[in-house]
Amino acid sequence: MSIMDAIAPPPDALTAFVVEWRGASPEVRLAAIRGALRRHGIEITALPGRVAFYETQLFGLTVTGRDEAEAAQNWMEAATRLCPFD
Image (tube, rainbow, N blue to C red; front, side, top):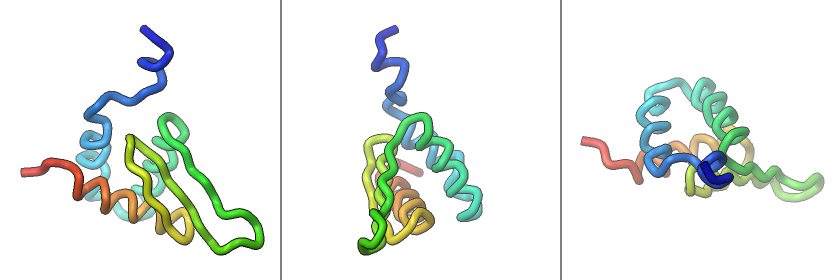
């Protein structure tokens, strides 16, 4: 197994995550996104004294929000639009 195989999520990770968490409450989804970010993503918080800005990069999808909760909500909405559901 290469180093990239060890750290990169599988190609269907975005869809699997959305399927598992899209029906959860916003608080539970935020906790799930935090956990996934620790393993597979990047989060960028606002600098002190700057306009609030929060960026979430997870499973190849990047979104922003005014704070962590808004960025998580925006991420889930964008991920849901990208996933092929019947």
